[in-house]
Length: 287
Image (cartoon, rainbow, N blue to C red; front, top):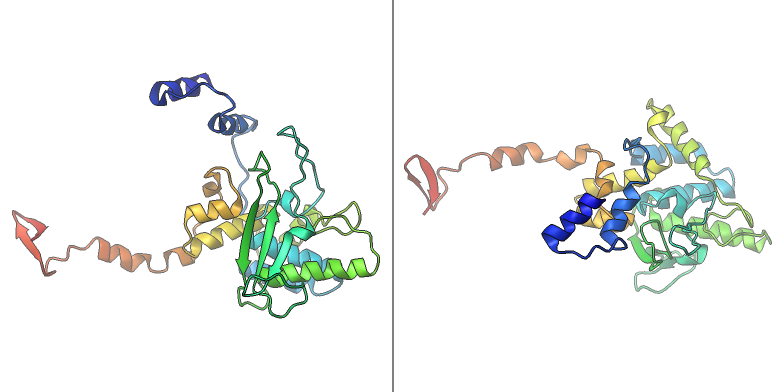
């Protein structure tokens, strides 16, 4: 830390304020006792479809679980933001639970007007995160997704399903906590249950269950955005990362390099006969 402080002062003439966000970010890194990270593999859409097949429509809790899995994938949510056991973050001196509350999941139509969970004209869904791990002062962030036009894998449909289950339970006088995945006054769907269905799905597909966990949903969402051509900045903002550390989790997917071979050939070929070019001393130069 002394070396880092000296470098900041020598090169940037920075004040030696250890409460500076840059120093705080470095200090947080020292909390890790082991620099190695058990990097999990991403969840993909075929895995999600397999999970749906295995879950079926057994009961409302299964519907809530499925909806939360889809939201976790599309919104790149941390486990603490969707599933239990819900813990209180005291690291900033203010007690905050980062788990998303039900009233902060808002479904809207194409005009931006809030609609009910049962509405057939739902067009987008917003999740308001009052706080999260990368938001020490609790400013909050709102992230919106639109319909995917996939009947099974859609963040809007998933949010509506979760809210409908909650509304049905409340109509039946079931005591529920404030969180989207609450199943009783104190309990929510646990991340261990999410991990179990992921591991079961990948096992049935001939993959290693030890390489996948509930965190694989967040990684899978980031990889899908990268494969779709979205920038690192968009991925960072969507995933609510406070640094660029997410890049160590992304994986190379086939879709990312679909036209890479032809592009490489074109980029490395001298177009000697291109109009406007002239040869000078063995080099190709533009006239």
